[in-house]
Image 1 (cartoon, rainbow, N blue to C red):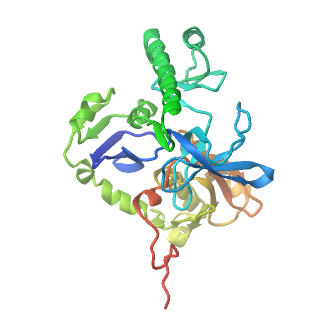
Image 2 (cartoon, rainbow, N blue to C red):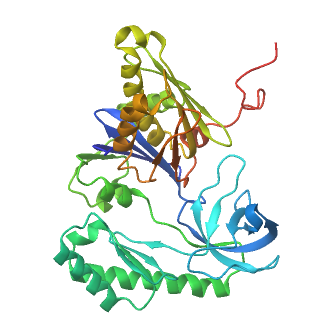
Length: 384
């Protein structure tokens, strides 16, 4: 789902970003200026070694967060990690802390720019599949090969729209950032932030540049920094004016009513997300097929808006057979095809449920905006 309007509200070192389509909230992101955000790089300290499933090894790492981060000993293109307690290590957050779990970190660093992603420990050069012109692909590939000193590179879609000089300058900047990170790691004491990922706004704008029409901000400095073909407007209280807070409150509810009379019920658990489609009165207003189709559109929207991730299990209404659910799975796949987190519809399980897996990088909307009730401890129920 591509964003048409972007509403940005900055207060108390917190940036809130609301993506809108047809006047409705479709994405929400929040970033703390001094938070332990996805993409940040730290000098951490190994605090504990553990054995994981399948006889694998992992380590808990103190990066200064309220919970220790976790790293697998095995990573692609790198030798297995062999470390002792108290040893320092340079790591990058790939999944932010959520609820009871600490952040996930890796040693295989990614330095993201506007046009390129630099992988210092990589060796391959990859190009975005959205760059389809063969001459353009060859030009960009040769430019990176001739300009970069080493490492692996990912050439992003936006690179096709800028000059050779812009690409060469970004290569130098990313390589220099990495050198500064490693130099700082040798002279500082763990735990220590070595590199903070810049504001996620540029990434969001680039990803939605084809559909983005308007950007509303409440900070004149941000207004001056933004580079976009979209109209940029200033508004003192943008979330209030556009009703974003009310939309966020609705997005925290477990039950979503469908126009046809059916309902979608979303339950977030520690192990997975369970979604149930209840036909309700919908059977009398178009049948179960219509209920499931309408639910598929709504579920895809809610997965992105609520940032649901990990294992997602959907129990659609009616007969749990492939011939009845093939159409709704196609709707899910189409609606999720532009999802930045790369949701994947796995198909129908033997139990008749549709299964989806989605990469977890940031906390869910529920974890961002609420916390577990100390009275019912998350059950939503109290004793009689």
